Length: 248
Image (cartoon, rainbow, N blue to C red):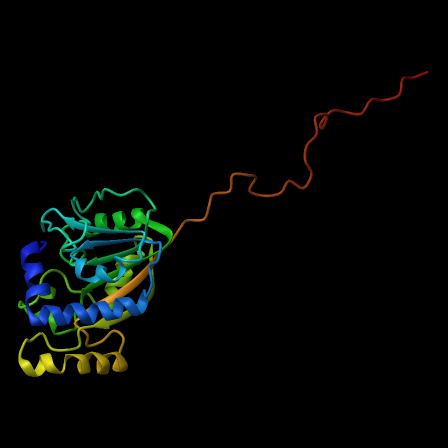
């Protein structure tokens, strides 16, 4: 079940823990995708906090928010990019998105298979998607104080297998949110240190969220010609007997 957009907005923009989480995940995102110049960038779920670095250079930024979650205008003070949509029927053409970010979308969806089919449909053949989900082995999935404590947490293997079954091929993975899910001053003051240490220790363990980057598997074109070369092509007169000489 999707969380309410107001709860998500309040967490990411009005709490210290939410702002720290936003910064930690966005830092990992911009490490993977430092530039999106002249690309179409889309986010689904509640990916708005991560899209701001691409507003100035991307060809287009689209913020898709599922109906059960609700929608809010975003970004503040700029032309709106948000649209309320059916999670299984996005108002986008096929193969149009170059970079897709899914956060608070997959783990809370009641129809994850259909959602992944829609991700595959809109992603361009050369495009990349990034799925951000709660880490089953992390502390954040066990705390109701953050949005990552809701929905289905994943292990890296579970997530990659599910993505692969829908033609989305894992390319790279990493983790974020190594700090404890607490807004106590000691954890807030050392948040950056926890993130740096965590990245050095492991790219997938201990972090509160998993990030898996995928590419779109495009089927090989079907061969419209002959499946095998014909060694001795038939001619029009093949099969007819040769004329015999007329007797004297």
